[in-house]
Image 1 (tube, rainbow, N blue to C red):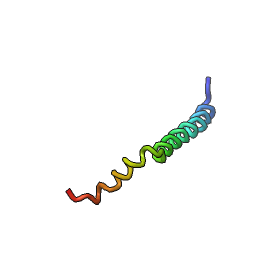
Image 2: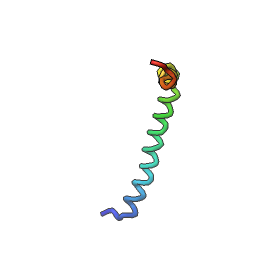
Image 3: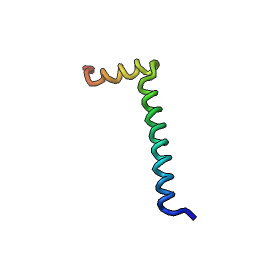
Image 4: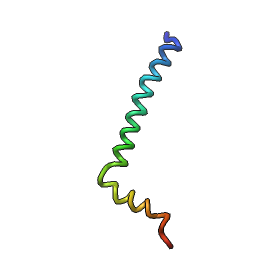
Length: 50
């Protein structure tokens, strides 16, 4: 049977790993060279006059 402290330690450790992996994935997606054109187009949307 697990105590609260061991479950909390497990959640903190693997939660940190999980969020770091998600952060690294989002960062890689945002900085990937092939996505640059779509991000540049999206940045100009507020300046368009339709």
